[in-house]
Length: 354
Image 1: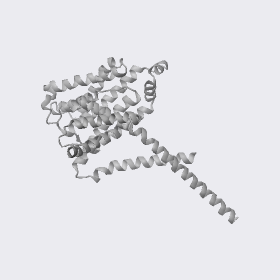
Image 2: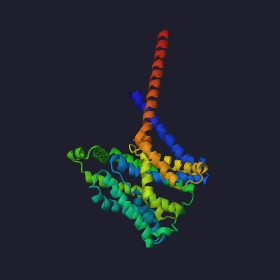
Image 3: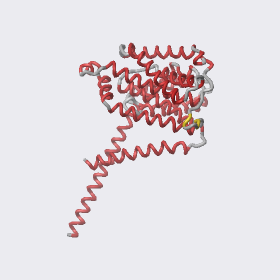
Image 4: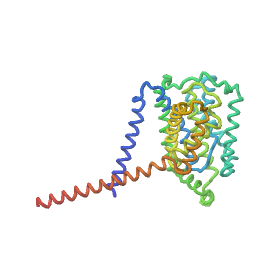
């Protein structure tokens, strides 16, 4: 048993080392290919939003259709404070996260009195309100003309303007966000969230403050989205309200469902699949359907969402661990057999020599 546990731990360490090697070496493999690097940066930004949504949906059991509003809140806060108020980008990012958390608290107090579909509709309404705000408050957001001239993030006075540099910045946030979310899941808060997800009545009977934990995780998911929005604003240096409407919120939901809500890394997996499929569709669909409009992407991901909910409700991260466990179990048995054979041979040789 101890031997098997050591082997499992060793494999886990090797998987982490392999993942770290891929993370560090991937930009160098595609160095100079700005298209691939920008795609990787976009995956990281969406993964950050998805990680917060995974905590909210997978562990607290709450569906939000307004995450793009917090995404835009972080983007516009950072854009305005750095471009017009002269704030450092890092301080503006923190201010955007604090504002998103405060708004999530104010919105969450009445919203979390609702249940099931009404909760989703309430967050959808919040997203519509914020989209209208982004579009109409032209003095702050620039309206439909967009917000120009957002300065880049600086580290030690060096501006991060290349895709290569931004990849490491964004992926560092993704890893830190995943690590923090994993610790939340394994803490007392995570156990309370799972109890709420399983049954609010049962959790309440055990003394779990349901409203408190729901608000906390909703605020945390808003912070994740806001940080991603701030990074996005400083990356592209131009934003407009269309990036933070209802459709992006739906796409965030689709990403999480594709990746799976049972793992904190489901957001990363879902973001990677969504972005790669989206780029593939842009290349393939015009060849097959020259007259197709932009709606084909909505149709495709809508069908994919239905298929995932029917055949893979736990997402890709819910299926992959089964295969890994089967592989580890098979390899562990083979190792045990090899060890037993070697031990038998050693005893036989020792007996012959004796």
